Amino acid sequence: MGVSPSPTVFEPVAQLQATPQGIYSKKKGQGMSNETPLWEVFIRPRNGLAHKHVGSLHAADEALALSAARDVYTRREEGTSIWAVRSDAIVASDPARAGQNFDPAEDKIYRHPTFYDIPEDVGHM
Amino acid sequence: MYSQGLIGADGGSEETQEFLDAFQARIDAEEKIEPTDPMPEGYRRTLVRQIGQHAHSEVVGMLPEGNWISRAPSLKRKLALLAKVQDEGGHGLYLYSAAETLGVTREQMTEELLDGTAKYSSIFNYPTLSWADMGAVGWLVDGAAIMNQIPLCRCSYGPYARAMIRVCAEESFHQRQGYEIMLTLCKGTPAQKEMAQDALNRLWWPCLMMFGPHDGDSAHSEKSMKWKIKRFSNDELRGKFIAATVRQAEFLGLTIPDPDLKWDDSLNGGKGGYHHGEIDWSEFWRVVKGDGVMNVERVEMRKAAWDDGAWVREAALAHAAKRSAKMAAE
Image 1 (cartoon, rainbow over the protein chains, first blue to last red):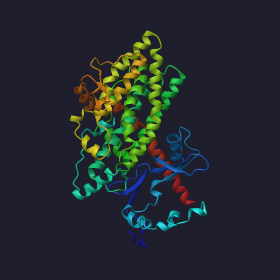
Image 2 (cartoon, helix red, strand yellow):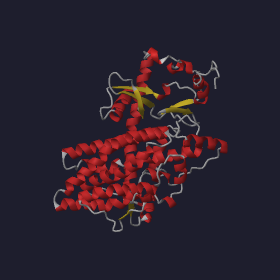
Image 3 (cartoon, rainbow over the protein chains, first blue to last red):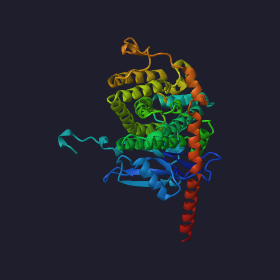
Image 4 (cartoon, rainbow over the protein chains, first blue to last red):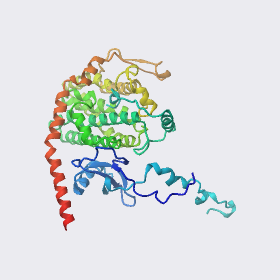
């Protein structure tokens, strides 16, 4: 689109609620206080690699979240470290503004090395 | 499980044709749909129903096998069974999480299972009467589940497809440990082999029913195929399952309890396939509608687990609230 991002593009989006593996618009009547909170789980498969999102679970607090994450997501040596993050603590970009946010990069091909012509005789660069 | 999830699904919606066409174009281009993307209400409802039922099947599916943990014949078998049942619980969690991305809560889904609104796979309403059933369940029930779940790894809905990839990776051990139990029994005494044959006799037809009604009678299949939630029809998957299983049964020296089972080179566009005997659909519908041998007990067990665990959930939340209040005060 080539539209420059408006200054408000990354303002937190009102009425968003975290759900497992994603964020969707909050609907009326949801989010009862007696529901056990939702957590997102990130696992580092081994040192040298980044923690990666593997899924979600419900737990009352940090200790129970880590304990459940260990039981559910690392039963087959999948990881050496776990992060658990309350889903409602995640700030997400507004999907309705994905175009404004991400399309401007589309026509900036000069940011890629292949945009520049270097004669073959120069050798590998 | 799975295909049965479409029974009674309401895939209808009231969006404009333009919106529906744009959505279909994304599906046709093999784009994945993520929770924040616009989607027809019918697509969302179909997925909530199917994923919810799939999750319930995993959780209720722990019961027939949990039944045998304390009576497993060796420590090795007990360890395998414990690990398998624990996996099923995990699979239920992955699937509930995927359904929750569509705007239903875990509490809502649990209530629907307990009050009978939501279904689970008909196969779990059959009893597990002997140790050989642990072999047959792993070999056949998990085998049928894998046949259904592998194409679901390519489902158009991202969170469901991702959950299925994890499930399939873990499920393969389930089928192999089951087949190994059958192998051991079939190499054992005549009485043990007879036990294995008896388990196959009882579970064969209910396993074929797991794939759901014939294509012509499966009202909502067509829409699910168009939306690429489903990739193969019920009869196609059932045919693949039979073809894979016949050889495995022959190796065990067991007889599949269907005198009409016959290979035909001309089926599947020349690739060949099996004709099978008539499935007793009246039994299938009876079990789906709640009248199987174990329907009442399965739901009672789930309800007892939910009710008996209520104080634990409440205590954990109270403890968390108290601790965070204390931390805020410091």
